[in-house]
Image 1 (cartoon, rainbow, N blue to C red):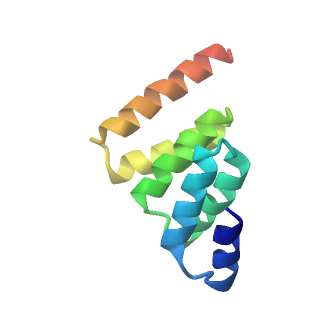
Image 2 (cartoon, rainbow, N blue to C red):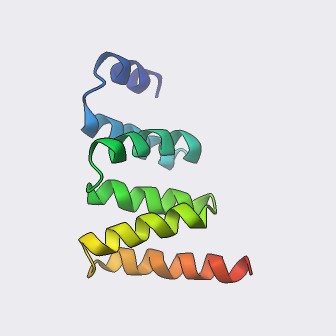
Length: 100
C-alpha cells in the first residue's frame, strides 16, 4: 500500500491504478481509504460501472444507505439488467429494513 500511495503521488493521472488501490484497501477491510480512491475515480469517470459497483458495496458495508441508494439508482440507469446490481439492491433493502 505504501508503494501504491507513492505511485499515485507521482502518477496522479493513472485512473486505473486508483481503482486498483481502492480495491486493495477494500480487500484489506479499510473502507474509508477505499472510498477516497473510488470517489476520485468517480469524479474522473462518473460512468465507470466497475467503480460504481465497488462504491455501492463499500457504502453498504459502512451502512451509508443514502450514498449507496443514490449510486445504485445512477448505476441502474446505465445498466438496468445487471444481476450484481439486483443483488446489491436486495442487500440495501435488507439493511434499510434492519434500520427501521
